[in-house]
Structure formats: C-alpha cells, structure tokens
Length: 431
Image (cartoon, rainbow, N blue to C red):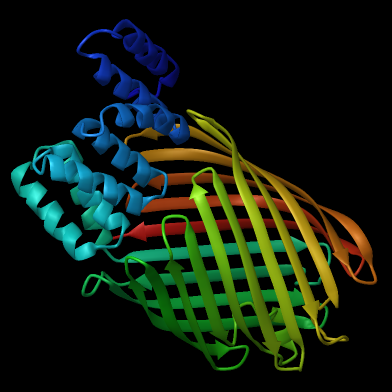
C-alpha cells in the first residue's frame, strides 16, 4: 500500500485472510483485508467487511477504531462520534480511539475540545505519526486562508459577453474564539457586449461562523466602479444530521446579477433556499429554489435539482455520473439582458478522476468531464447542448491546493448557437 501497488496489496491481504481462518491472527487478517479496500478508495467495500466483524465482536476496540475512521471518511461525523464513544467507554486509554476521536472533534467543529485532546496526545506521544498528523491538521486550521478563483471565456456570441473575465479572492483571518473568522474579499467581473464593455469592481468584508450544526457568513460589499455602491450577503447551512442539510442564501445587490443588466443600470436582489441529501461519498441529491428581483420590474423564479452517483471506484480512478435539471420563469419581456420567459435545461455529465501520483500528503490528479443535454426555451424549441472540461489538481494536504483547467461548450440562446472556450484556476492556501 505504501507503494500504491493496491493490486498486490489486496491479493496479499486476501491470502493472509484465507490462510488464517482458524488461527489467533484471523481477526487481524480480516481487519487488514478491510483496510486494503478502504485505502484503495472503495469505502463501501471496506464497510461491508468491517460491519460483520463488528457484529461478531461488538466490544473489540480495534474494530471500533477502524469503524470510526471509516464513518468519518464517508462523511458521517456524528455516527463516527458515537462509535468512538463506545470504544472509549471500553478502553479510555486506547491510542487509536483517542486520535480518531480528536480528529472527529475537528470534523464536527468542536474546536475547543479538539485543541484540548490534540494537546494531550502531543504531550504524551510526540513521536507517534498519527498524533503528528493531528498536530499538522490543527496547525493548518489555525492559519490564515486565501481562496482565489479566476475564470476567462471567449464566445462566438454575445449573450453573456464575447469576452469575459471574473475574479474572486477572499482572505480569512486565523480563527477567533474558535468559531469565528473575519475576512476581506475582492471581486472583478468584466465582459464585452455589442453596446460596449462593462466592468464591475467590488470589495467586501465580513465574518464567518462555524458550529457543530450550523455554518454561515455575513458580508458587506462596496462597488468601486460599475454599479450600485452597497451590497450585502447572508448565507448559511444547517446540518440536520450526517446526511441532510439545508442551505440558505440572501443577497442585496446579488453577485448573480447579469453584467449586461448592470451595463443598462439594472441590478437584482436574490434569495435561495435548498435541501441536500448526501447519503455517502457515492450518492448525493439536491434541490434548490430561488428568486431574483430586478430593479426594472422583472421577477425571476428558478429551480435547480440534481443527482450524483459514483459509478465506478478503482484504486486510482473514479467515475461519477451527474444529472441536473434547471428551470426558470421571468415576469417581464424585452429586457436588454438574456431573460427567457420560460426555459428548462437538462444536463447529464460523466466525470472521470485519475490519481496519477501520490506521496503521503502530496497528490496530483487529472479530471475530465463530458456533458450532454438539451435546452428548451419558450418560443424557440429544444436544442442540444454539450460541454467538455479538463483539469489538473495539485494538493499538499492540508495547506495548499491548486486547480486549473480549460473547457469547451456549445449552448443555444434565443435559438442561436454559441461556441464557448474557457479557462479557469482555483487556489486555496493556508499560511
């Protein structure tokens, strides 16, 4: 496994498992065989092997520790918390359970307790590799964070600009009183239209809050050029449990206001509420409903639903399928910006992810996504759509990640086809 040779590792784990059926090492061999699947990325197969072991030996702290880590990896921190609690009740001093529980405090945003548990472990076991990993996680958590996204595009049409550029950068402070981070932000949006170019520059400041069941942010923005001066945003997500969550977003002078509308002195406020169901890393469904209130009297309703499913999971490759449906309705005609009376957009995407290199905390991935679909617009009928997206992803966990890529797309607006070429970059850096 250290050499990423999962084929031989899984073969060896199965051999050990079958050879030790009636020996004292049988349970250890069974756990190793389960961990082989987990480290290879097939978490469902790992759970299918660990669960029967737990049912046979529910008081075994080794099994409870591995199950807790698996539940955390599958995105179930509350279930992991319960499992670690059972194990620590049986053996409060068992080190794998203590390290797993400490990391679980981070996953559940129980930062004060995380600091306490990680500090205790670092004093007692400074040379232990899992403890050192926890220290790195905690150090990164307490750093400043910079997030940057840049996108540029060229189009054969001018519905959203024949040339466009967007930039968003946010700098977060180190955490304050465990749950708060201040941040400052800068935004730039620019596009070229037949009636001329439009540029919008915004600067913002706000505060972020993170809690066990709630995370959110409030931001005030100021436009230096290109539109109304003052804007505001309030966003949050309520986590009902490990699988259900409710995101909400309210914006005064929304960043989703079309740039072409701003070119003509029109702005929009927006509100959005949704519900998300994430069963595990293989299945995710969501539904969002929102409105936009334009200053020219137009009122837009929109609905977005999606379904994402892991189709194939191999040690260094994953294939996901995603189906999305978007629909909108507008209350006003003859606007200077793209504003269909009614439309429906259906898109099917196959997303490929190849892990090309990994060495402990460093990894490099290739991603390729192919999308096909159909777009219906009232008075213009149905047109096919297609898109291709290729990306490189570099990651040095947990302090740095870089993503960049290119995209090609063919869309239809008011019955006219447009070919689009784009490039994008995203950076996340803790320092």
